[in-house]
Length: 345
Image 1 (cartoon, rainbow, N blue to C red):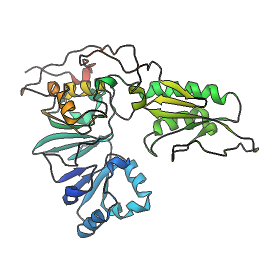
Image 2 (cartoon, rainbow, N blue to C red):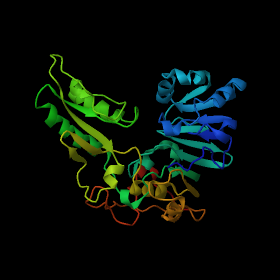
Image 3 (cartoon, rainbow, N blue to C red):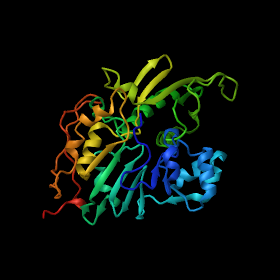
């Protein structure tokens, strides 16, 4: 459940991924991606009137998000207000994948949308650095969807793709009538899977993105009924199981679950925050089954910067355990990149 109301304390005139209530008075807006839970109020009548009364109001997003948004006529009134940003382009509002870095007189503030970053990858993001040093980050508004020890480790996208690829190869190899349905809960966000699987298997990948039931009456060109197997990308389902040692699990005669996440795991978030060492950390999502108080008791506070000088990072590899989501209780250390070695001083 989201606990982020749309505004940063440091820059209250900018609203991010919320377009209702007090956000109607913002001077600028940011949209990280086109998932409905990040678009509340975006097409509402109050927002439409707001734009009619002020042509100076802008919406910052990626080029892809702009195209997706304007493909829906309900958002056409935004067209003259959208400012598409190049990824990693240095401006006052910078786009980092599905995150925004706002730089200004009240400090550097980072907001993450649906955020997945592998351990060690923060050191590769140029906009988080000034020369060879990590930028001073005042605050991070963090996607804490899986900031829960139950999700200490989540298999990478590559691991998920490998598991699904093996299943698809075995299934469609039986005959031309055997096809795979990727049963996705949202219209966007699964491009990685579709692109990679589509390139390898082409016409036998069926893309039914809307609805959550198997397509009925699907037949081959010769009229023969198709043999369809369903693969549902999930994360929460895996986290709720006590045994979870495979990235793809059979759940029925013709159905499977595959572990795939838009959100960083517990260990990935610890790694990211240990690297940045922000002064403030604000969770923007309350994990399922927890409260905001529960989240505040997790070791977020231990990852803040407690003194002006940044301590040197330690090199080393983390031990993430053998289970699908398992790992040690201690926060992992970062795999340090030579480009970002910090000077002592």
